[in-house]
Length: 384
Image (cartoon, rainbow, N blue to C red; front, side, top):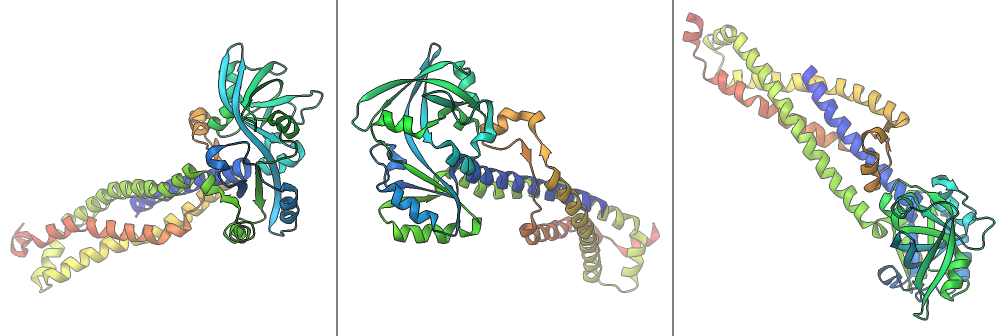
C-alpha cells in the first residue's frame, strides 16, 4: 500500500507540475503577449506589410468599448526593420504603442528592469529587451539607428535613444520586440493615426469563442484571431504535453508494478502451506487465482485514498506558494517562454484515467503470482 501511495503520488505530482506549467504559459501568452484575441486587416499577420492597416480604427474602437465582455484593449502600430549600432545590427519588430493604454494589456511596465516606461524627456525614445541589449551591448541613454520600409516602399532610417530595458519570461521575443511611441512610428511610416493591431483582453476566458464568433460576423473584412492561432507553438505544446505526462505516468506505474508483483510473490511463497492445504481441502484452482487477483486489487485500491489526500495537501500548498525554478536553469525556461515560478495544479480531470491505469497495473502485476500459484501441487507442498 505504501509503494502504491508513493508511486501514484509521484505520478500525480508530475501531472500537476506539467498542468501548472501549461496554465502558466497560456496565462503569459494571454496577459503578457497577445491578449485573448487580436484584430488585424486581413493578410497583415502573414505579410507584415505596413500598408495593411485597419480601416476606420476609431469607429471600431468605439464599438468594442461598448462590448460588456471586453475588460481592456490597446491599439498598436507595427513594422519590421533593423536596429544597428557600432557593434552590429539585428532584425526587430517595431511596436508603436500608447504607454498608458498598453500597460493594462501586456503589463510592460512590470517587465521594465532599467529606465522609464513613459519615455519622458525625449523626442524619440525606444524600449529594448534584455536579450537584445546583451546581444548588441545596448545601454540606457545610448543612441541606435532604426531602419525600415515605409508605406511607399521607401527605405527610411531614424535615430532613437534607449530609454528603457525590459525583461519578460519569453527570451526569444525580448530579442526581437522593441517598443516606441505610436506617433513616432506612424510618422516614420507616413501613416499618421493609423493602426495595424487591436489587442483585447476579456473579462472571462470562457467568453473567447462566443466573442470571436460575434465579431467575425460583424466585421467580415477583418482578421480576428484568438491567442492559440497567434501562438500556435503554445497551443501545440499544450496539446502534446498531455501525451508526455501520460508517458511519464505509465513509466512510473511500470516501476510500481514490479513492487506490487514482488509483494504478491512473497505473499504467495510465505503462505505456500496454507494455500496447498486449501487446495487439498477442495478449493479449486480458479477460486485460488481469483483470491490472489482480488487481494492484489484491494491492496492497490486501498493506497489510492491516501494518495488523493497527500496529493491534495502537497499540490495545494505549492499551488499557492509556487516552485521557484530560477536556480535550476532560468535561461532554459525563458527560452521556451515559461515563467521561472511554477504553480502546480491538481489534475482532477485526469483522475478517472489514472484510476484505470492503476487498476490495469494491479491486474498485470498479479499475473506472475497467479501463475506461480497455479503451478503448486498440494501433496508436494504439504510434504515439504
